[in-house]
Amino acid sequence: MKPLFLQYPACSTCQKAKKWLTENNFDFTSRHIVDENPTLDELKRWIPMSGLPLKKFFNTSGLVYKEMNLKDKLKTMSDEEQIALLAGNGKLIKRPLLITDTQILVGFKPEEWEKLK
Image 1 (cartoon, one colour):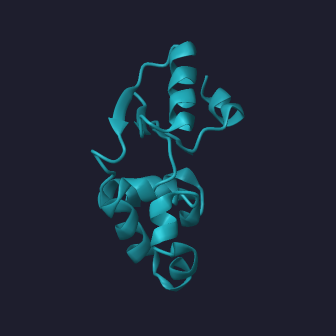
Image 2 (cartoon, rainbow, N blue to C red):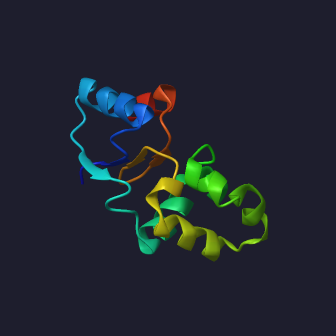
């Protein structure tokens, strides 16, 4: 399966990640994270597979996160409620995401992505 690259085209970090994938000859499928938001089922698979805490999937610097005052609200929400929130709005999800058969990378850190080669 080709890696799935979830991105927001206007995001400069996503643009850098896409450039990195292209320069490193990765064959990937691109998906707009807002137009085709990750589903509840996808997130329920991906979050545990990533090995990261659920909080790492939130775009904490995004406007929607701040407008919804999620810094305080997330503390009292269950994991199910938080995942449902992410599934409801792609702008809440930290981007880009790179989904492979064995790995989920959240955000773009070239040193982590290098390990994919």
